Figure 1: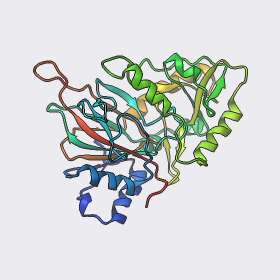
Figure 2: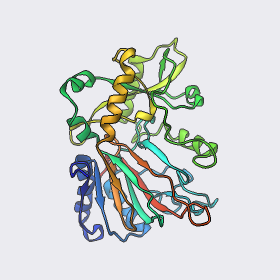
Figure 3: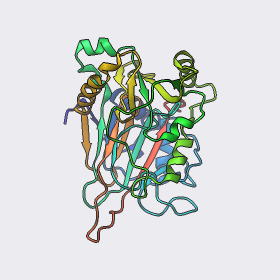
Length: 330
């Protein structure tokens, strides 16, 4: 493990002042992946910490805690909400992804607190897009410095969505990867769950979100009214809004093209960037009390398949998830 891919922070969050807790979010903006082990947090304490880290809206989604809306559940236990449902991504393996790759203005940062790990390892891997960008050859940096990724889902229903920021294109979206983040079926994400997740894609940090306004300008510049398909355009080289540091934003399982690169070069560039990006990853073996805070504007993560017990049933796992915008750190 390279020390520049992840930052290990040795502290007891409960003993920190509010200002020191806020500094953890600022540290994450600079370090991308921050690991804090051996914490003992209840839901009220974790929700308070998440409020200090940034803006945490109420989402009214099934995997959100009823009393502390800052907390969402990543669990296969039947415990969530009045309907006693499982949490988000309760089943199977998750391929490389980030929070809201296709969303208008997704939350900048995600935090996971391990309340109950599986008995056998179910590891999560975290990429550091800043380190990945810094180690690119100069000719590749020069080539992609102004490039927008053309992003889409593998489901046809995404093409039918009517959202103000989607770019209309004549280029039929064909994913450059044969991987998918998850499969919409009973053993990973159900169709109902996927519809709920799609409904959140228009979320933004505020009504006058600068990111939202930029996305609408991109749509105006690149949309073709005669196009038949919807895509999302986002910068490949992302300049962090807090730090000003450049890093790669490359959710490669959603990439269908590069806006200013000749089409016959797309696949070679894609394969090179995918191989390069995934080299800069940290593998985390979960233990009870672990907290990981990871920036979503310049990194990806993925999860191993949830292991089975001696009877062939998935082992219990319960993570408490927070997702926040750096805006509003207080």
